[in-house]
Image (cartoon, rainbow, N blue to C red):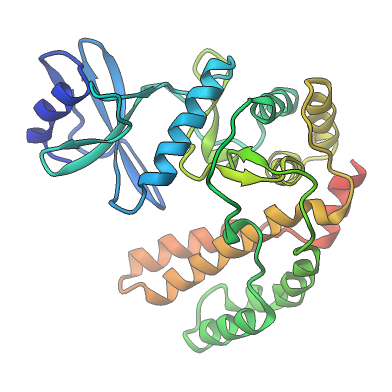
Length: 310
């Protein structure tokens, strides 16, 4: 993003004559960066988008608007004068959301509030067309795990021994994948702590609907338990609040954790792949941090059993 994009963004999104763009991204994730734009009509999060993201972003924005209309706190997407989600602004393709001041990611969020929020999301009446994604359903496979471990050992990755010790458990977990979903509906599919934050007024806010699509709400609820229910007693509180708020999902058996297993496995593989491809110490350190998010607190069959029993 450059300052000469500002005038075009203001015109495209009908934001008035003047605006100030942050000098650099104010937030960065694995898959993109966020800039802040302050205008006379409010402050906005600006995110550049790629050419291959259109269908997913359009549906994600429509689902987010339905979520907002249902009274669930989420930043409002800003559409262009022509009603489009994406604006083509001087060669930069961007989308905008209302700016919300948020606290840092925290898996220790109030478990009752988390359960209520997820139940609300699962009750939104929205018929989407983005189908089930292999990232959320397919195993990595024993052969790929073994190949990855060998490559990391050969390159002397600092986490190679720890990952090697986990490989039998990672393969065993994949036995829980492959069963039919109980139900399919449009879900957020990325409710990790990065995307559910506490606002400065104390409430919760859910954002980043880029990965929204069909999934089993029971499996998404199980992923939420993995992220927010690690401390004793929290999983039971999340499940009880979710059920009381009318959420349709139920976590009753290990196979309900299929989405969490698949997602975390693919994230781990991607972190390892990026570490192997890195050409600088800084990049290797960054991707080692990504890998250690799993290695230092792995999802195992014992963890799943503890979450099931409360």
